[in-house]
Image (cartoon, rainbow, N blue to C red):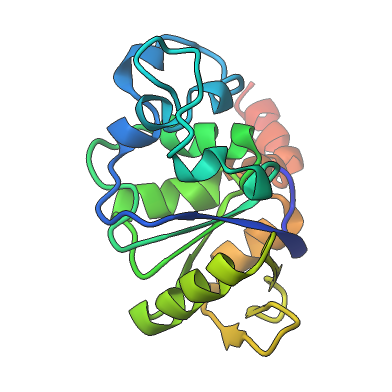
Length: 196
């Protein structure tokens, strides 16, 4: 998992509440067995017209000023629905390093930390202010500093956010569940050797 310390990136806005995991990554694309390659299917039913190839010019992520965006700004209850980890894989593979919203579905929130995507919960008022600022920016950029737990835009917006100390440590050091286990590889090996 890629570590996350300080990230500066373009903000893409998704002005929708209750975006569920089937909207993030539709079920027909879940047949892959690897974690990569899902970005091309992110928000597929919204990003493309009915032919499945032509980009929908009205969809937020298809705007030219947010191409290459790495921070997603959205509304409350993002990631609701089924517990598919593929939703985070799709966001990550598309290039998003952080998602900012007033609230997240619990399982999605946890999956973000396990896959190197930082979910940041801000108040609805702060999220609304960011939406307004993003509409004026062309493109609008934010800096997310996980070490100091602060978001800034260099234009007067600065907010702190909280991340559990353990999750923060793991993100700062790029430690997913497997990497955390491998930190104890010598003890595991010694235990296995002792058992014969």
